[in-house]
Image (tube, rainbow, N blue to C red; front, top):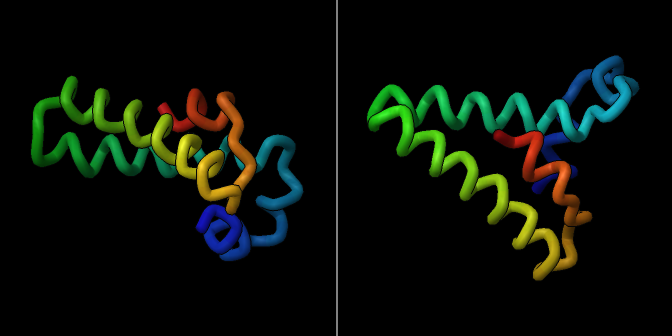
Length: 76
């Protein structure tokens, strides 16, 4: 899934140093902002943190991605 999203990015973004971390930060921020519209901010923040961790756990279990704790941190 992460690779499919990464393939949608413009070529110039793929050349940015740590583009994967930036993608995590952007998507985590969007997730938080959308969630914060509907629920309390602190709950949206907790959900974003949990999402970042779960994505990396999924990568490790499924072996479809490369688990990286820095990706989880970049998400929130």
